[in-house]
Image 1 (cartoon, rainbow, N blue to C red):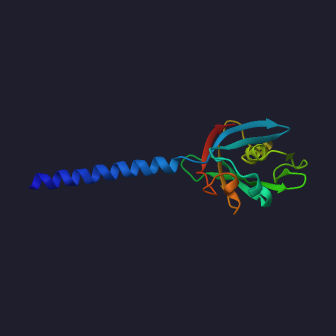
Image 2: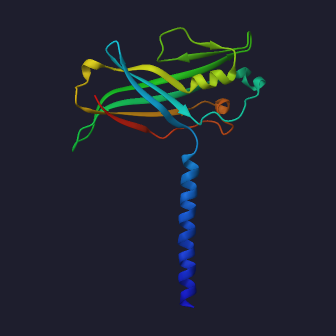
Image 3: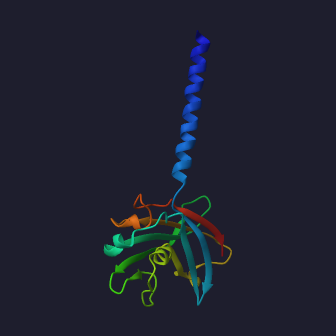
Length: 184
């Protein structure tokens, strides 16, 4: 009779382990920061970043008439300090906002990080893809970085609008922090 309790106890813990893994894998699926690329140009460290797996399904065009949604990218640059706390070098909040104008049926993208005129497209799918990226954001002047030092970029993206259905039927999303270390 004692052996039955051991088998039941083992079965319970095995079931708990499978449930833990299943929940972890389910939570891991969904929006995530991807395609993080760093460049230098005109004396600045530049960052290009995209979010993947955020757009699921099609959106009814008539539902998009009142469309306005925003994705907020939190981007931080740290100097990695061995045996001490990392030093924050720069922090940026980049926003992408999509607005639909029924007449003449176009989508305008307002980008806090882009000084040029707002891009205007006539396709909701193209506008949704453009919303998920930040291109050539000026992180920091190169003069503030030291050669041979290790730095870390941390990026997270959040959608916080009631009209987030434009990306996914489940609504808003929040990615995990994505970190990349590099030596300058």
